[in-house]
Image (cartoon, rainbow, N blue to C red; front, side, top):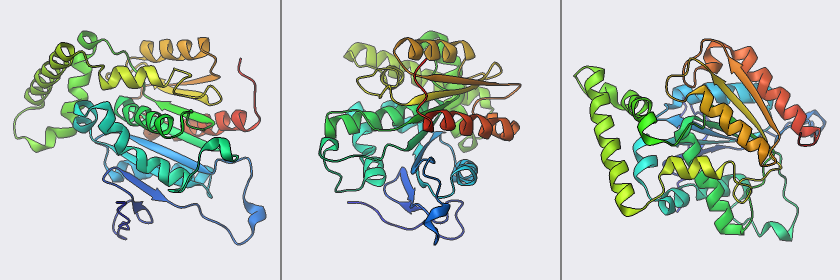
Length: 302
């Protein structure tokens, strides 16, 4: 059953409706003069927050998108790290079904039966946001046997490598950052415990022969069977990111180009993981607006 609790007026997400524990939606604003609505703008923006991001932090991205596209429907997905990495792909996929209902409606019929408005922009932050985006792709594919219609994918500080050993330190740091405030001891202790937990989880997955959440999601977003090549990609990253390495992002962008995706990339100077918008807001939003503009013009894949 859909939870239609409305977020209260003291919340950073005022005006949003809670559709599930992770999914929130704000309907499109319809002006009195319909001529003021730009038909080239996206009709829906889907924002996948980074691991354990708070509503206060994600709301800043809401503000930015409303300045760019004031009449778009907004769908927010929160991404608890622990839930993303320990749940089976089937559970993660079911958890993203409310996203489909929010974007397309609960009575959405098979896409082959009518024309779908694909003016959808998906914005993914960090690998945990990427895990939930891939689960959304999987949910749509299972429901309709085709790829999720969208025109643009923003990859903010993602995706990284899926090699476990080379990523143990940054992954444990990311996990520790989300829970450090829960414990009285030094951060290094929390990171050590997080690393032990991730190593145990990785070992169990190897024994059971399971594909990790990171491996599944990283593969899905560059697989035309899951993610439509009609969507232009924009990678936002920096060399100072100590959680997702810039070389891995550039390698993923190159792979996407090889597989037929149109790709843009924007590097930021001196910014930390998912910190590009905070330090360089003008550059950040200009890059998104510019890439959407290319998408709206129907620029051919290079």
